[in-house]
Image (cartoon, rainbow, N blue to C red; front, side, top):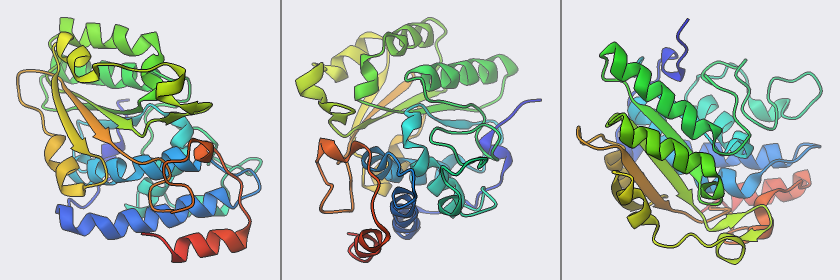
Length: 269
């Protein structure tokens, strides 16, 4: 049976209504960081605006799937799905607990998650496969992958890009959360990614560069052009919304006390 996050109907909302949902999602991410296991908070906070805008635009589309390839940001995905009413319970209440479905990487047993992701690069390939399936079926469905800039170091990303080009998948959209950080530090200090726009163009993508925290810009960018696959380079800030975390690569993963979580939620920008 074909699975899609889109089978769970989401009200389509105009961009101005997204800010409040993003703020609520950020509070949930902070709450998950305050659980005994903690969570990948930095990347979840950087990607949440991308998720919120993508679900607003395509969550109602039964032929499209949004796949979070940077699966370690599962807290962000769970938060987005919850604020849209796709998940039945608050993920922060059981995140990381033994026996809970709210695991540290996206769990395909939960509503709205068609594929488990975690091994970096795989979600991009899943989304490309989804796009190819929709093309073969003659639908207008999209395969939308949301990944990270550190993840671009995976060879599978570029192998997938080659297949996307070869199959002329103009219904494939790849959003890169360019927050500049990864597990061990800054991307530029570990494996710099030069000429990223030109790289994607060489694989036949139309490239759009946006502010990854501006909902209207995201909303407009995640639109196919009918001719080429789309690569969206979304400039984001790791830890966005929490001043103590913003731009800090050490914010990759955190386990915080409840009193600190309370202060961070009050101070959300």
